[in-house]
Length: 256
Length: 361
Image 1: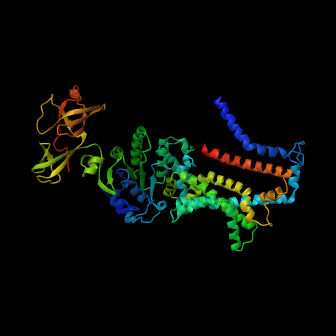
Image 2 (image 1 turned 60 degrees about the horizontal axis):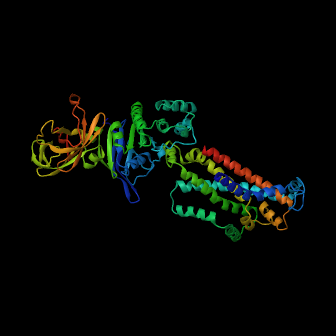
Image 3 (image 1 turned 60 degrees about the vertical axis):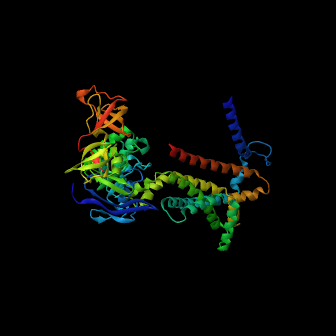
């Protein structure tokens, strides 16, 4: 009886979390123009979606920004985490807590401060500033993910590599990098999803010359929810689902 | 063995913040010997090892290897290898790749690497395990991989940082024998760090007993055990009984010490003078316990009552509470001729020892 109650409770929580998404996906196949009542199955909205030039362009822009920014953030973040762990320098702890502060700070604060910064240095908002902004807010997540893994290592591993004749570079290349790979991939995936669906920071740091998907959707929704938005959301949900599955696969392999 | 030392430590000093870990330490390590640094945790023995390996930098003094000062030479440029307490095997590599790592860093030919890895594997008796990952190995096997990974590089000196402490008792004893065998086979110098005096005594050619960053005594296991030079070494290495006494008479090479009113004759190695207060040290197995009912006590001897009898199979351990108040620990071997002599709690006994078996400090 208690078991039954427990699983029912759990089921209820998951329903609560996922019903909106399920409804959204179902309605993306609804042939009615008005989302509220079911009028039969159709793939029209997907057709409309994929033939909407500007929307597809924004989608492509989003993907490019997400790919490039998460890759840059992953490289910088991995090196940063390694430096935090390997070298003892002045202000190391303070700098590491600043990484956390950056992660916690509200997006709106980061968006506005980045905008002010770009204006101050005379950079006009567009693709470049958006990229810089995305790298900035992804970086702490990579550092924290990779650092957590490094601190889990036997600290003698580095000593052993040096002891066996490896130079600093060889040690990084042959020992640290392979051991950190799951964390690096996880950091990259995290950055990718963060970058892909960011609205607030992007809102401040890009201009009309470079449109990205979340902002495009945001402006479209202001005129009412169109069924192709449902279809688009369903596609994006699928992308996130795939990303999570891949991430899970890497961690599952790691934990064996 | 009295050749030129392969490694010399001269006035080596290392501080961590305000703590002096190694204090103006001098040590010569000779070619081919098995030297153990023995001491309690925090005595600086591991730091000495890390200084030789090059993981820590010296604050003062110098380390000379083959006549060349090593100051500032990074670990990857030193002809020494280390086996760590935690093994620190590379978890993402197979046994083969772990062992081949050092050779790959030297960019040796592939076939040569294979040959040498095979040889190292056969020395540590792990042939056939090449493709396993470290987490698929038992603790003892991981230990052997760590050994193989170090010795495959043919270092002049192998440093071992408490490599057996993570193993259980039986495995540790097995590995002690293995280590000795590998040491003999390779003929290279082993510097072994441990806090376990039994391990040190059973394996080493020489033992350096360390305390608070200094060497208290260095010598063969026998000398360290039989003739400790100071109270620290006496107490740290093995069980020992300590009697307070006073020198009453001096003869040529010997002296009489008064212990609880009994005049014991002892060797006078350290030129004590009459009236001096001394400590007389005796190992549990050097004392002789006789039951009063078997023979009447003849002076000098210390009377007492058996407090505890601990049967050990080969020996019997006794805790005797002396009439003077103190408790002593005695190990008696069974005498084949008088198997019926069984000590029992509460029996009156008297304790003495053969002349010369004591250490007077």
